Length: 530
Image (tube, rainbow, N blue to C red):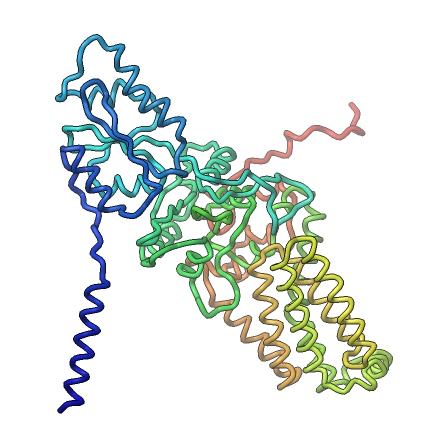
């Protein structure tokens, strides 16, 4: 009985401690008080212990006013010059006194010298605008608030894309300030049917998300699916676009990405003109593009700036690189360990000679080198730029050469690992390249266990998964499984631009034509004579 009483007392003591430590927070409400003093008191209770909230009380004639803003998120020059100065100084130019009754309407329609102002009738909306960098102007005697646009975020300038370099093409990339990103798109798409729709995601962060598309080109089913998936996101905060990508992707267990992301503005604009939807997230310099296919992940914006035969050769090279990065190691293990008779005699004798004295099997040899390569790659990414490059190059050379001289690793395996690493760098989409690197390890394990049969079996499993995989309703292997004959002009082989007159499968069925080409309008060749 005494033991039970002790447990009850401990529970009561713990409950009392929790009640003492629990703070009561004021929730934002819709009602706005007519008294300016009550409104300011409510804001202080709502945003308690925030020293970056600046409150400035002043008189506009004989009317009490106040501005509230977050220091560091606003342009103080606009507040001082176009709001407070106009209401305190310029009001003296009026010969008649402003009465309390019409003070709000005169300030809103006559005295404020800013281009972007808005009436707010809900305190909840006003507080959200305040935390987004806007300034709230309170006028005594009214139950409305004037929101003055004064946003001025700390930001970096427009820079070159880091992960998607190109020899030819624009050099600007998206910025962490989402308004800069929308401006870069608007600069290139001067179409009245361009739509930039705002959504807020995150219960606490209220992160700005923008859907960008052309209204008459986009497929309405895809657009509605994107909106539906975004509206179902219920999370505290969205910090980066990658979180949105993981929350709205089709298959979370598939290694292949179903959403394309890019830093390049021209890539996003080209996707918009094709009928796809671009998702921009505030605080992120990367745009998400949906739907996506394997061909869009292999293609690069520079393919359309070069002549068609150059782009075709480069695309074929990328396809071969993707297959090498994923399967070369596994294929070598399956052949050398299980069916060496398939190797030509001279090559087989050479491989056997290089492996003479190597104490570990091919499977362990491949895993060791691949692990060291990934370790060096990760270490190079986390270190400062010049040091990271030095670690990657010098570390790879030293470890590879030392392992070969010590007789632990065969030279042929070093060549194969280096080849797969270089092949993975040739893929433009970084998320697709990572998927190929992960599949490479699966191929190594399966081929080491089952040999050539495992290689064929795993390839069939991957292909079957790709056949049924979709990105927002569009097959990931389009146009090869959707039988859109017109889309074959721009896949692995890219025909001349004059023949790419039809938009791909992403566009609305009513807007397939994007170019009118008449051969007889071309100038005659210089060699023609009358």
